[in-house]
Amino acid sequence: MKFNDRIMKFFLVLLFILNLVDALSTFYFVTNNFAREINPIMRELLQLSPLAFLFVKLILINLAIGYLWLARKRKLIHILIIPVIIVYIYAFALHCETAYKVFLN
Image (cartoon, rainbow, N blue to C red; front, side, top):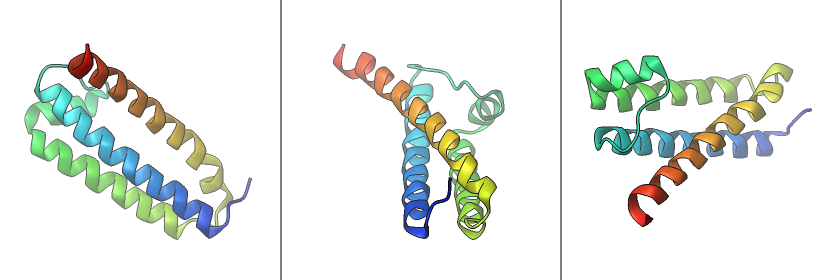
């Protein structure tokens, strides 16, 4: 599977948006006791400082996105980008479910 630059840019923008939604949703739902962070490392960071959690989550993923763009010609990047996006789409679905329960139920 090989993507051209346009498709890779789409995937990376999608990853950026999904990560932003994940970070903000997690921050809101966890700090308001509607959910808990599943990732134990990020859970500890969130308990330590919610702003540090946001900063680290957004900076680390954006650095990774930048690296993925620079390495976009490597076949491994093309193979791994799809499962990463699937994981973020799953997280997005969980946030949607939580939002439904909190706001509409």
